[in-house]
Image 1 (cartoon, rainbow, N blue to C red):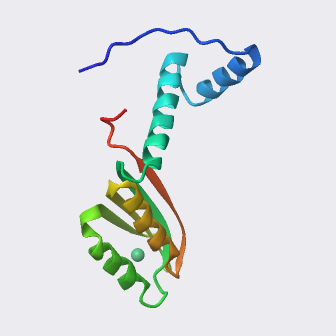
Image 2 (cartoon, helix red, strand yellow):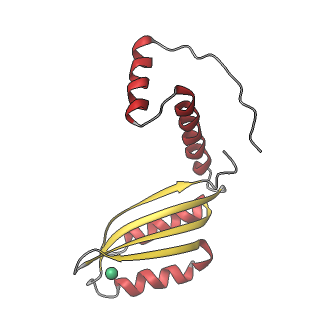
Length: 139
Ligand code: NI
């Protein structure tokens, strides 16, 4: 069910509003209300995932050199230990030497961060990034 929309006034300096309008235009928004709603949601997600007990989703992407001895087995083994937290894993062979994995996780935010941090610390994992979000019903 769609929640009722409430109108409210916002006061803002002219220069700041100008910068806001240019920013949202660059990002494809056609009106301020939709942009402000999205910005608020983003902050709420950010705030929500700062609490380690929050049920969250995580998207972890990382690139590694599959020639590094035992690394592939280590990555897979670690994911099997944490299979309850991992929803899916995709593997792309980016070239002769490197692989990209994208893992989707669903667990408490702190647990997701713990798993991601560990994987990113493995020797041979070159770089990666974790993005945390909420399921959507909270926002
Ligand atoms: Ni590969």
